[in-house]
Length: 119
Image (cartoon, rainbow, N blue to C red; front, side, top):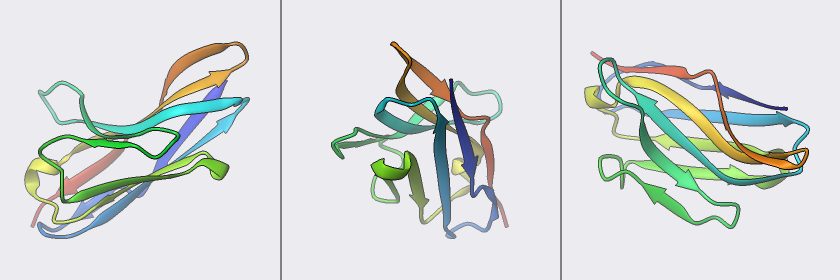
């Protein structure tokens, strides 16, 4: 099994910054893509940013230029640096990893971390 543990959420004023971290642990043989998703009340979960094991990144249009995703493959950790935050970024942020544990590739999810942007 694989566990994803997120940290770094909280309350921040508009224009502020936060850095989210997500560490994967367990019987991991390999991790392909890792990403961050978010879900605001009444909305569906949406992709925020994705990064492959080779470092290729993909961002939602709403965060491009403000958010940066990165990863440490040796530590099985993915980060999301969020700058110029606005109230529309308020949501629960979830970490995701496409990981090989045992003989099966599977999509794993973290428990989520709340990000609130408010004055």
